[in-house]
Length: 181
Image (cartoon, rainbow, N blue to C red):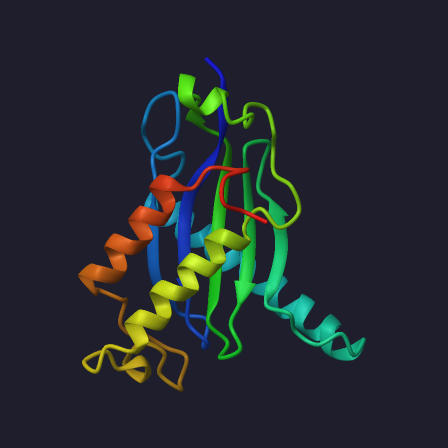
């Protein structure tokens, strides 16, 4: 069976380092997630130090913060975490399973088998996550301060049905080499 990279987990982390949302996706060949929800939560938390270190490096070198942090770290031979930070300090993390999806006959024609990931491959995912988050912020009933309290402790998870559905759609439909830049 030939496999291609797929999304294993999407995470949204609040500006005070509190988890706002986690979506977990199944991987080939067993069609089950590679890790438990707790393990993915810990993996997302482990990216916070990398975000902080790179933000400080960008500030001291005068490089500014572009938002796309690229590859944060390779977790093991199969999983890799990529990150993006908004100008408001909300962080998006995409954990990619490098062998997560079986290639169908139609996908083989796209030339994605064995491709791996190229620079900027996650941009389409981060744009979609950010668009879903902006739509959530436009909801007059959503109160961002309830989700990222100034104390950095607690905070509510995002429970919006539309937001959760959009995250699921992003994770289920993304394929490397399709729609990216």
